[in-house]
Length: 200
Image (cartoon, rainbow, N blue to C red):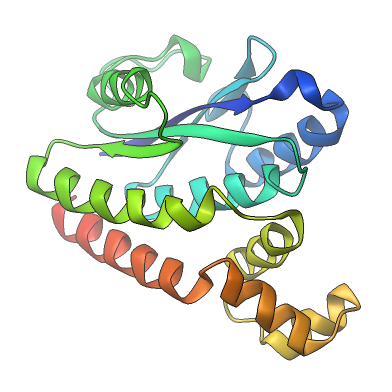
C-alpha cells in the first residue's frame, strides 16, 4: 500500500513563482527522488508518493510551507491503495492509489484537503476531522504557518529551542502555535498515523 498526494497551488499567479517553487522543490526532494517519487507539472500542480501513515503529516507540512506566503494556499488529495504500473515518472504510474487520489482531488470543490482510501468508515471519520481542522488551518497567517512548519518537521524540538532558532520570544512562538491549533493538529495526526498503520 502507498499514498499518493495530488495537489495544486491556489492563487499561484498572484505570487512570484520562485517564492514558493524553490521551497516546495526542496521539501519534496527530502521526501524522495524526482521524478520517480514526486514531480511538479503544469506549472503549479504536483504529485508525491509516500507511506500511508506519513501522508497527512507531509500534506500539512506542505500546507504550512505554502501558507507562509500571504496570498497562497494549496489544495491536496491523499489517495491510499496499490500501484499496478510503475513508470519512470510518478505521473506515468497507475493503480488504485493514483485513481483514488485523482478522484478525491476532483471532488475537493471548496475544500483544500481530503483523503480517499479503501476503507469507507475510516474516510468518513478522517475527513470530518480534517474538515474541522481546516476551519483553523485555512486561516493560518504566515507567522503561524512558519512556526507550525518547523514544529511538524522537528516534532521533538522544544518551544524554547525553536524560539532561539527563529530569533523570537518563547511567548510569541507559543501564541503562534496556539492560534494555529498545533496541539489539536498533533492529535489528528496521531489518530491518522495509528489508524493507517493498523489498516495497512
